[in-house]
Image (cartoon, rainbow, N blue to C red; front, side, top):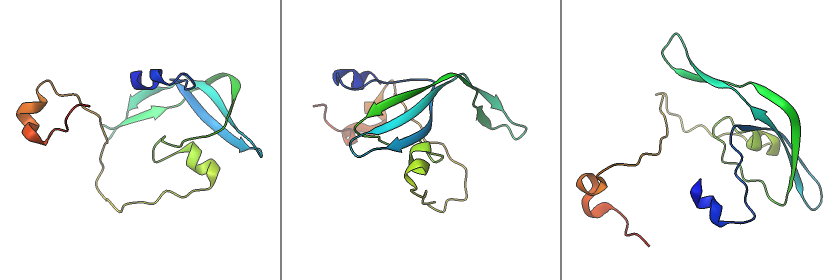
Amino acid sequence: RRGMERFRNVTTWLSTRCIGISQTADHAIVNTQKDNGCWRRTLGDEAVFESQLVGPIQPIRCRFVIGCDGARSAVRKAMGVEFKDSGYSERWWATDLKLHDEKTLWGKKLPKKR
């Protein structure tokens, strides 16, 4: 998230859900709403997010919309783009990790810092 701070025309909104997208000839409008939802544990010991939309709908006018909001993407649905299943039958999670000692684990496989 901090990496986006270097772009003065980019604003990061957290705890906000895209609830719809429309397009005109020269821009798009993304309708957003604050989401005060929370994670809960299911009987199968899985974590499920229960959305709780609150407050007014906030339209955002923009030139571009980038959909990187996961398998249940509101952006992709608004564009009419189907999710292509990779065919995995196992449950899995995608995560980002920061290791305390990456060199011990990865050795010379680590990319050089720019």
